[in-house]
Image (cartoon, rainbow over the protein chains, first blue to last red):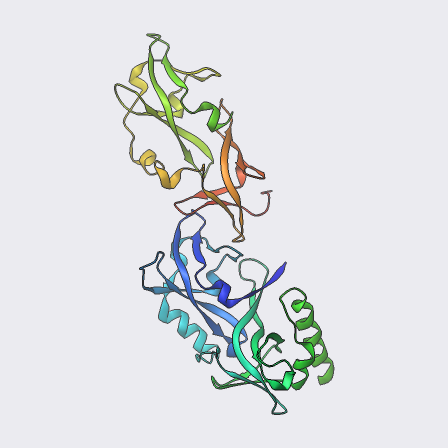
Length: 197
Length: 146
């Protein structure tokens, strides 16, 4: 089973052990593989006044990412934040902030700026957590300036922290909401693979 | 039998026929998952009755052989005692990270103490799917165990 969610919804979600204790909450998402997958999370303490934690969570230690909580088997799944960031960097994570980046097509058209990231969680324990799309604030090029749209992403993308390059055909697969967006991503990726052959 | 029915039930000594206390709380070990002890109130001596020391868990009273069966809580019981380890009233979270309801009651077998079911506001879950009970949530295995 797979499901889509926005990373802004994941932030602040509690990290709960199988023993039922909320040991932390998600502060930020760390991307790996050039921004194509979720590598882990940085954490903050629970409660209003708790600051950031020195510990983070790598994706492989996550038992499940659900609608209401991030499940881990035990508190020992947490690792020093540097380890999480290093693991992401060594797999080619850009490290830069994706939010606010300008999305350009490979034909040089500005589609808009990134306001949110859509991830797809598939499988349990050790399953994948792919970045499948961006929510963008659309530019004039899409004819609906200012509205929020979802654009699907190919498996791998080029990101510099300033620009993100997506294939021009991505604009034919934009969606308005998460329902049905999964199918759009699938169609888009299938179309790209078809084009390569 | 449900926790809500048994709460407040009196504990009677069979040797003296005296009432020695009332059930105040259930101490559940979620790993087994079983009621391992009863926390009592209105007692003269200790406030903990281990499940193994119960003579019978009857419909109207819990019987023990004598008041000396009541002890002070020892380490493994205090670890499981208190608000953090109580099931009722807590949110139920599946191991998939989805909230599935609120625990309203717990069903147990009065002969063995085994937790047979966890009663949620809109659902009922088999007792063997209980994974853990903590300050934040009661964790329930998402798939029925084989």
